[in-house]
Structures are given as structure tokens and as C-alpha cells.
Image (cartoon, rainbow, N blue to C red; front, side):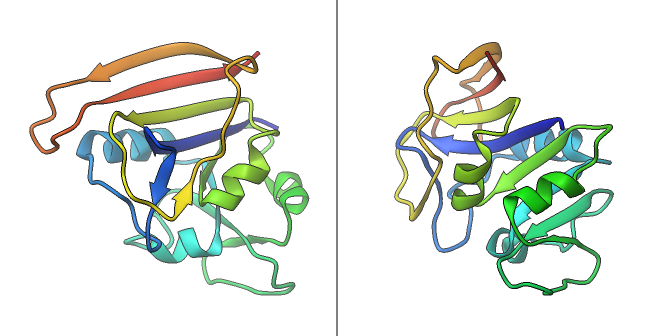
Length: 162
């Protein structure tokens, strides 16, 4: 299975607060849309209900819930991480889009990570798990220092599992 994590992380590993994003980075949102179009996106139920439009158009939304038999209109349901993996698209890249506990459970299964690294600390209540760069190889990086919408810089980083 081709499993990729896509996430934006503050320098203190914060990724969200009160089931919402910590920032608005247009370039990051456009990148997310371009990368995930026509692919499976896998998320927890709280992440799904935080989306501005549900389900996101032109993607297959897989929701992981621990409520056996729960259904959400227009979505593929999974009742465990293992169940989600068996239901993923075996031909194409599958994107794990959050939240924190879903990232923690999938990081050991992921082959690739697309990280938007925000170079500032933010107060959050949801965090991306720590990971060792001994397990990952940085294969691409683009620094953005001139975003007029935000008073912080960020980098787009792509990692492959070693």
C-alpha cells in the first residue's frame, strides 16, 4: 500500500487547536488540494467534521471511527487502522490528513511525508508525533520567506522512508 502523510506542523509540533487549523496559508491549501485530488484521503471523525466542505470534492474520504457500524454519507468508513489499510486504494497514493491520533497510528505505516514546516511556535491542543530523521530522508525542500499573508516563514518538505 502506498501511504503518505500530509501535514502542516508548527516548530513546537502543534497542528491544531479546538479542532481547527492554527494558520491560513493559501499556498499550503492549494498544494494540499493539488496533491490529494482524485486520491483517497484518510482521517479521523473530528478532522472530517472540521472540514469547510464535507466530503471534500473529487477525493474519496475514508473516515476512521471506533463506533462499529457508524456511517457518514458520501464517505468510506473504517473501524480501525488495519481496516483502513485494507480498504485503501492499492493502485495510487493514499493521504493521511489527520488528526493527531491518526497521524500517531499511521506514522509507522507511512512511506512518505509531505510536511509544511511552519517556522514559529503556536499554542495548540493537537500535536504531530515526534519522529526520528534516522528513519526518513529529506528528498525535497522549498523555503517560503515572502508570504505577504503571514508574518512567519515556512518550508515545504518531502520525506521518503529510508
